[in-house]
Image (cartoon, rainbow, N blue to C red; front, side, top):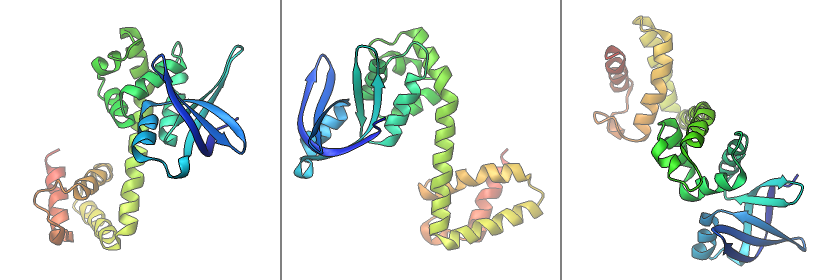
Length: 222
């Protein structure tokens, strides 16, 4: 099983709305079907010494043996999830990832955006519904896990903020706010602080008292 490749870019081309590259890896030439964005990056960034790194999905069939290449592991893993849906082949997966970024696809699936998904050539209404049904719970889980990891990293990097949130948790519990609501609130508070969307909080005012006030405002609105 080939899952990753690093080598010298030899050539890139397009055929029948499909995009390909040829990579020399230790003297072997690997022909890889890839995304248009990969070709665009090659053209615009002038990859140093023509070196390229891709995450791969290797698909073997009776009459074909194909490598599909992606810039990121997340793209590759999403492509694999698409292939696990009954009745959906590799070209549908590539068409989705060619038309939309991974974040756009995740948002469309999370929001039941059937119009966007069905705008891809070859995807009808029934297939759109199947894609959303099969992938919605998975992409939501991925989003939550990614957000939790980012939040944990933020708190680990900012010891003062980490200490503030621990004190706020104890304070809210002493005020008889439900533990579950407190736990569910913290990711939103951290995200708002990180994105500077709490209008009453400037960087210099990120204190225990001010964040506690924001937390109580959120909880009292529930």
